[in-house]
Length: 366
Image 1 (tube, rainbow, N blue to C red):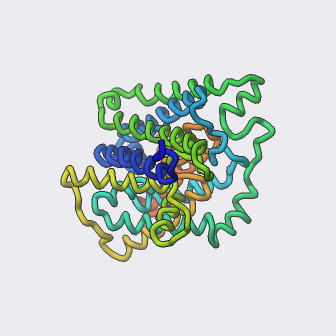
Image 2: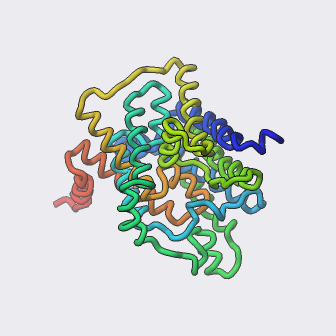
Image 3: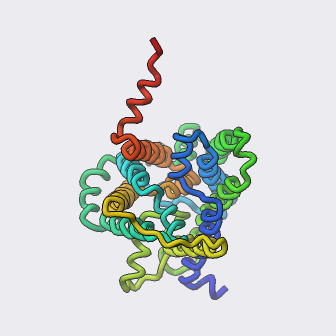
């Protein structure tokens, strides 16, 4: 009980949950960018379905805990007003394009660093610095002046949760039925594919990561009622927590690490443990200056875009989905569009080549 009342218990909980997530993600090659690329270019949707499964599992567990009164999501920053529509779109496209330039997102870069990739270390450092600048530095002034004013306040119609919005329109609380309907639709799409039903590794990845995100809500909500200090109600994101982790490493702020910092460290430890166990540690670096510059630009776009969009492929794609935030589909569609542009730029020389090619394919043959 004394340990649970210690402020160190919060980051240690994140460390434990992150270690499990990192180990499983490394073992089963969980990567959103790879999943999108294989879906578009190889016709293989197993990785994409695994990621959607993580979101569906997190949504189900989170909403059940909310219904039972085990957690309180009202203080989650995904549900705070106003709804950052412009940030979700602009930031999402930036994040997706940067993700394509790098070949993975912040979460995936941590997994790669666990296997010895120095390129991932460069990317993570770039994301952390860009996130700090976009949240608290020079880019933050730009964000406040140009992006934040374009947000939409939904307090008058229930808030920016799909459950709260529809409950307001219906006049009764239908949050749980709405969550059940969304989860049912996601599970139907996920398991309708026979190949995915036979891929146990991909299913395990989705279930474990989704459960880990839901556990984050449970842990931070619980500690918020126990500790005599403010606790950020969060579940999992890998943009701003990277900046916070960097600050904890290089400065003495007087503040203890929070859950997000513990989660980042845990994912790295879990990935390292798996790489060591499978003898899969290989030191890698950028081949030339051109590759290094591409990784630096991609890291900047992900760090900045992730702050503008209030999350990444895990933050908006899983955590925000679990609370039915309206920003989640907007941000994720924007991230996917940005990633498609980035891949088109790398493979075809133009970020809009895929749109031209799609239009040509859709023309009737003469």
